[in-house]
Image 1 (cartoon, one colour):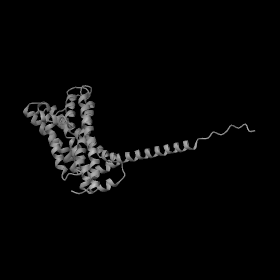
Image 2: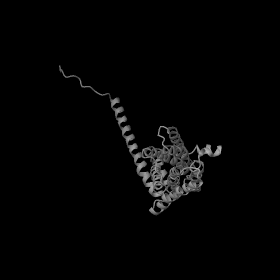
Image 3: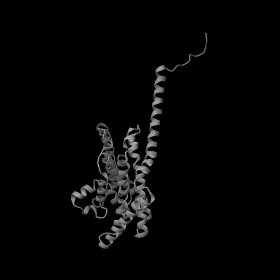
Image 4: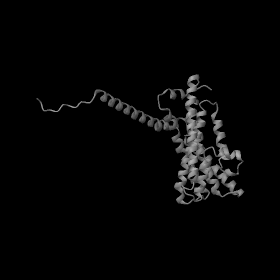
Amino acid sequence: MSNTAPESRVPRGARGNAGTRFRRAGRTAGQGRAALRVFFVGGRISYRALFNWISPVMYVTTMLGSPLFQILFFTYLGRYAGSRSDDFFIVGNAVQVSAMAGIYGMVMGIANERQFGTLTPLLATPANRLAVFAGRALPNIVNGLVVSSFGFAASWLLLDFSPDAASLPALAFVVVVTVVSCTALGMLIGSIGLRARDVFFAANLVYFLMLLFCGVNVDVDSLPGWMEAIGRSVPLTHGIEAARRVVEGATLGDVRGLIVTEALIGIAYAVAAYVLFRFFEAESRRRASLETF
């Protein structure tokens, strides 16, 4: 009689379950890597292909020259009127000019797919739709930060804008949150461009109305009630107010409520934009009208 202990055996069903879980985990990891690649690489490629002002001459004159003269014009106008300090107009306009990238850039990044006839091949791919959609925002967020930073730097050089050095990290954080929130609004307008005939008219209208409704050059509390209500429901307003308080010496804790409100508004617009994007995709498939005008 053998003294060898009986060999333990793993039940056949358990081996099968473990293998299934392993394969599922592998597929999930592969899908995650593919989504990240679509997000980063696809976003960069789409920006290079669809952003109309990417050439150096167009970029400098449009994305840097126009914001610079906007800041100079309203600062000197405010200085002549004597109603507010230079910092009020510098901060308001230096933050608002980031909408050049957030609004126009996102409209180009989404609506130009339809304009250039590449929407059908894009939506025929099995790529993760959220990665495709959100990846287009990242280059425009970076672009908006560059434009806003240029506005502040030019103001320091030409308008003697000199906030306390200790406030710069807090100011940078506020600007980042505001630029992301503004880009979410651009996503929404770009999604509308999947069905609208001329979405660039809407982009122009929104950009310039922000100068009035968001307290860029006029304190939002001074606006009529209905205008103030609209201004407080769109991006930029709370971010600009927080940035002004930070320049005046407030800490991030002092403006936490404004920052959170700005972030929540941005999230709401981003969710609405993605829902609209998927809705128009489904409707266009159903009606066979992806690229019709």
